[in-house]
Length: 410
Image (tube, rainbow, N blue to C red):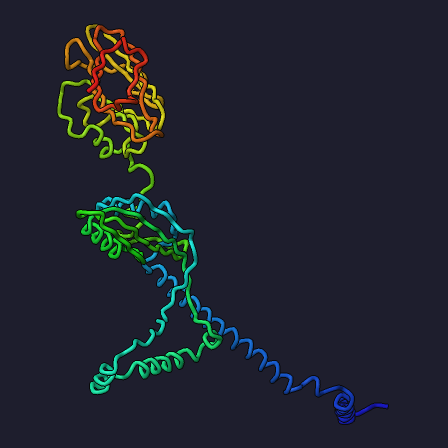
């Protein structure tokens, strides 16, 4: 049977209609094209998007608040890390600058103390009947009215905070160290000290001062100071030139080997009758315990040092060669010349090499600094040591062979 072109088209249309009817009749079309499901998915995605956008805004706001809080903390006039040793050195500078003789300093352990901006209500002061009448005439509120009004205002201001509703005031806390100082000074010096503490770049509170006068202009008393500490960011760099620990707090000796420090050892010496100098100090001095140098050396290139609370061995060597005199010397840790060679010199006195030694009396039983001097002399010079201000009962200056040198003590 041969179908015409028209019949083929009709059969094709019929097949399509049957397939479409079957699909409509038997397939779950509602699940393929559900508008409600699409709307729900859209709402979910929209919610997620809004949440992410809000988080981005909150993150920016949080970072801004963190930066503001960090800047505010960094600008506080408080110490970032309070340590007793720092406070001792700090106070020592202020004692020295204001002529305060502090014979005892005691510390309390670091504690956490609250810092609050809320001012406690004062108790109502009793008034006489005439004061009350004059207050009414002048239109001044009575104590009771003023206190009640202030209490109502404070109550309304505190109503918004759940913590305050529970009977607790919101507070910040900081670390604090209290220092109790027993001192002796004049009244004027004490006032200068108090003013310098109050005008200091760091907030320090003076909470108590008790004084008595034993007679004359002298005052004896005690003073309580509180130091506060607030931690700051690790990246914080102090830029203020007036900041406490940058300008005032120094540990140990103030670079005793610097030019300015060493020059103090032989300050004021203008005599040219010595060939060598030596300084012997206690360990508590700002200078090294032992300094040895050639006279007239303004650049201090010939100086050698030692800085221990023990007896330091010092050795001088002299020789004569081709009618010229040579020397070298050393401590336990350094020598001049540094390469161990000899250095030529011309003695101030033709037949002698003179060493001027500046000593210092001992300042206590634990002061053990001193020197034991050995002289190796193969020249025809007489080696003379002129010692000034040595301790009378326990000298710092000893000689390995005192008979080989000439010693004069003043």
